Amino acid sequence: MNYKDLADLIFPDAKDIKYYEEKYPERNLKEGAVVTRIAPSPTGVMHMGGIYQALIAKTVARQTEGVFFLRIEDTDQKREVENGTYEIATACETFGVGPDEGRTANDEDRGSYGPYKQSLRKEIYQAYAKYLIEQGKAYPCFCTAEEIEEMRKKQEAAKVRPGYYGVWAKCRTIPIEESMKRIKAGEKFIVRFKSPGREDRKIKHHDIIKGNVTFPENDQDIVIIKADGLPTYHFAHIVDDHLMRTTHVIRADEWLSSVPLHLQLFYEMGFKAPKYAHIAPIMKNDNGNKRKLSKRKDPEAAASYYDKAGIPALAVREYLLNIANSNFENWRRANKDANIEDFDFKLNKMSVSGALFDMVKLLDVSKSVISKYTAEEVYESALNWAQKYDEDLAKTLENKEYALKVFGIERGNKKPRKDIAKWSDVKENIYYMYDEKFEPKYEYQVINEKQDVDTILKEYIENYYDGNDDKQTWFDKIKELSGKLGYAKEVKEFKANPDKYKAHVGDVSTVLRVALTGRTNTPDMYEIMQVLGKERIEARFKLAMK
Image: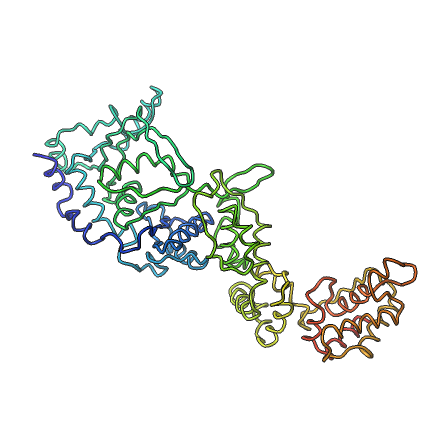
């Protein structure tokens, strides 16, 4: 009896691995093209770290005209949640990091290298596990959970490394005949990889982000096929990344310590290993201390948070690139209107220690992004958000023609308005333009005399307002009104001789602005008046004079 007999007994129906090598050939891509993936487990909500990783993987692939794919790693089926795949795929599409191929939101495959869901690839893993057994590089292990626990306690008492290795790997030396006899007798078993490593030897490895790192060799005989016939993560992703022809594995740096094991598995399988890039986690400032962005503590850690708040996906991507490469901010400053995809992203320029997540900075980025939207884009985005999260706002936006006029105020200028950071801000920033929502609040600051306020409003509407005026004529008339009522026509005149005037033209403008909008700070007042029209302006002035 030999290893092949043992392999045939364990996996009698498994195909020869040549079948899969031919079924999934090298990809027909140009030289230098990168193939990357995101491979989450469907065990809960999509984390912002997952979106960050997907953005980086997609960007690297796109820049080289390569492929970015989504694989669902669901071999730990006890932890899987309902609709887990849908949540992952939908989040990727929502944030503009949808894959070129892989598992889709409706739980189907797109692409020629599937299935892209590990639980559907069981026969593939068994074929490669069979191949390892045939080579004498894997073996059945009959240890029970109780025996493993007893071994762990002995290791703890002896103060040695825990694990299944060396003299502790007791099933490694069971003769083939005995293993076959026990299997035929119905004894339960798992399949372990027979590690050729020694802990006292070192391996050197170059990580694209971390640089040169040194590790002890792996000497653990890890489980590769569990009792249910499904593989462990370590084995499954080796087979998948080989057959899906992944060139670069971009993943969280919590996996860095697994590199010796993974490289060893690639080598022992006879596969070419991909390049590794381990991303430091997104950090958060917590009372002066840096810690990982946490699913449990931080609402902004969940990808769904941004959709609910109404922060555009483009703003999130722009911000994540900002924290991924330190030179992005300078590039954006020099290329204000460039497409985000024009940025030359580099993996080796990523932070080794982890970027700090700053919500204030993200909202600033979002304001800049939204400021470049057309009125139509703002309207459609705000309406789509409102239909999901704010019924009252959705109803207000039903009159599209008027809403477009409101959103068009101070948009498309050299310095467009930057008052909207997220779609949940829209209400606050447009409701004063709707008579049924307008809540007048009158704070005129410098001009405290009600008589003067009434005079300014009455004079302006009766003698100075003309809806056909261009902007310069409009402002010249406000200056003229200011001079007539004893206010300086220019701010500098008032500053040079404050005792000569009641106040200045800016204060007169504020009276008009507050009466019209109930606030002292708004987008361009000339454009607001153009949208409101004389009848509504007059009605608001009368309300203010009351």
